[in-house]
Length: 294
Image (cartoon, rainbow, N blue to C red):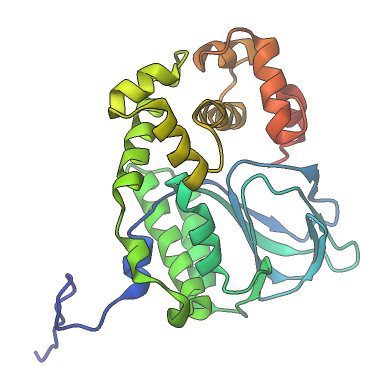
């Protein structure tokens, strides 16, 4: 039997695979997936969420507002809504939409802008992919996986999500604009990664900046400078942000009360957790839980 072979691992003799190099910088984690089928009353009111949301319309029409941008999405259109971006979604009354939606997280946080920049080459939130048979088949695979939740489903979802993103990147990615040095972490980014690890490992505790500085062995002034340059938040605000984002996840996926979530995240009281949550999501945790109509 005749066959051909290719050496898939990285090899200097093979042309650079810039899309793989770029995606290998990130940990991309699927969160929630669904398929809305031609229900004119399906949609979501004005809201903000903490993860990326990707919507692929395969039939009908969908009316989507992102910040001050209004879109009428038809078959073949794909929308990417970045985290903490105000938006509404409503199916068309005369031509109800048929669409897949998928929420996912991208780590590290400080590379979110790079991810958005190269996923959609324009400044717009919409790209027309068309009725892509491979893309639709991948979404169908996710639907079938949801029916059983067999062992390994998390990695199954993650690998399918990566394939979906690759299809989009192949259409949108502009190699002329890509700076390959972004694929190599600087010492400051390595330090930020250590900070992230510390925050996640201690998310149920009150985290003090002095302790964080000792952990990464830098001064407070140096830590503030790095956070302001890469994250655009001072360290204390970013710790708060990570805790609230974790709170959003717990609201979506657990029956925990607001008080239980605030304790789990190291807040002094449920009132303070509610106050901080509203700063990011513009609604209270209780209101947020009610408006999530998945």
